Amino acid sequence: MTSESMSELSQASHPSKAVNILLWAVQVLVAAVFLMAGGTKLAGVEMHVATFEKIGLGQWFRYFTGGLEIVCAILLFIPRSTAIGAALLAATMVGAIITHLFIIGGSPAVPIVLLLLTLTIAWTRRGSVLR
Image (spheres, rainbow, N blue to C red):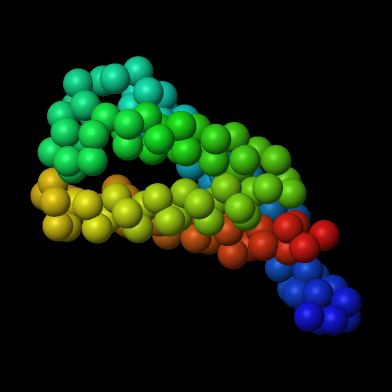
């Protein structure tokens, strides 16, 4: 990729002030959701313990998922790492959707909404990774 095309991509992904404010609001909301979800997984809330038992990979996977959610939520507050954190959270939500559909049942609506929000953040903030 040439420096000219990188510059064009960076400018194309630089949102207006109003969009930037809206994105920050969404990032804070999404980060709060993942900080809470990750924290309750790490704290061993019975619902999560039972869910991860049903998944069948062991409780280490609950700790891994909770830790990943917390780390990525923190990355949403660091401008140069926002897109990376959001992309990792989006991948986590793909896993959650698949898990809901094929293993534990229940509605995948919340992971789908979070997937759409994290993908939006990752896409609109992608230029910050290039700068």
